Image (cartoon, rainbow, N blue to C red; front, side, top):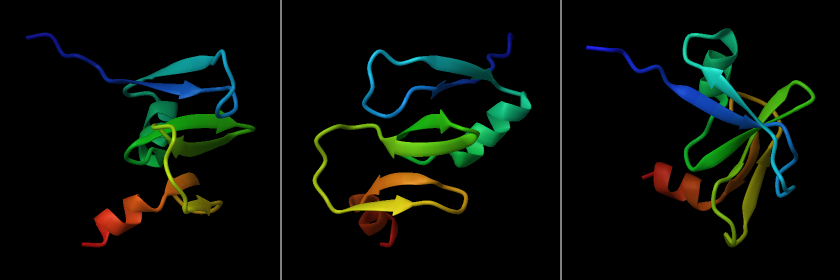
Length: 87
C-alpha cells in the first residue's frame, strides 16, 4: 500500500494581499515540522521575515481579536477560539 505524504502551503505574501505567493512544505522536512508545530486551528499560516504567524482562515469575523506576538502560536486569533477551548 503506497504511503501518502502530507504537505503544508505557507503564504509568503502579507495577509489580505492578492495575489498570494505560496511555498509547499513536504512532510519529513525540517521546515514542515516547524510549520506544523506553529499552525493553529482554523487559521492560515503565513511567513514574514523568518517568522511563521497565523491569521483567521475565515473573513468577516467579529471582534474582539487577540494579537499574540510571542510563544508557540503567533498571530491574530478570534476570541471565540478561546471561549470554545476553555470548556
